[in-house]
Amino acid sequence: MLETPDLAGSTEPVPAAPAGHGLSHLDAAGEARMVDVSAKPALFREATAIGEIRMAPETLDRMESRSLAKGNVLATARIAGILAAKRTGDLIPMCHPLPITHCEIGFETPGSRDRLRITATVRVTSATGVEMEALTAVSVAALTLYDMCKAVDQAMEIGAIRLLKKTKSPVGP
Image 1 (cartoon, rainbow, N blue to C red):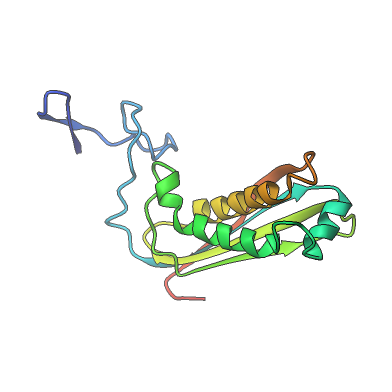
Image 2 (cartoon, one colour):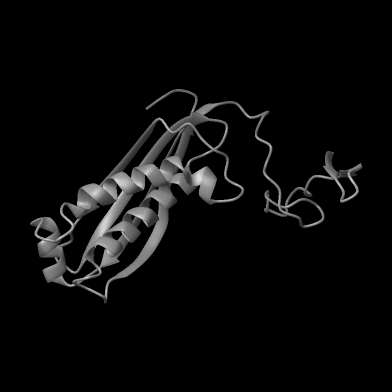
């Protein structure tokens, strides 16, 4: 039984969300809440997310040759993605702030040369997972690329952002 203060400052019991409804961020009354993970053991957890930014092949050429006015946009996007993973708890209201132990951002160009694939792998030893951190890292890396290339390609599209895998184990990698 959780307790929550009412508007007058007194405390009344609020039951936890009923088992089986599948929405752990809602209490029994349907109100948003942070999930209590204090009783869960700290485990090694890893998550990998992927997304893409579609662009003109000429934009990709300029990005890879570092001939854009804003410089090495891939390095900047990598740093932005890492910072975003570390700040996910500040951006997503019900995410726990996590002590990220590793974040890796990768870029891949398919043979079609009409897009850039972005992957993010995030690791932590914690009582909760890092899926949101990996997804946030991909999203912010893509937004950074968009921002840095929009002067030469206004038709870019960000999409297909999804979780590829998540794992947990009692020991590290």
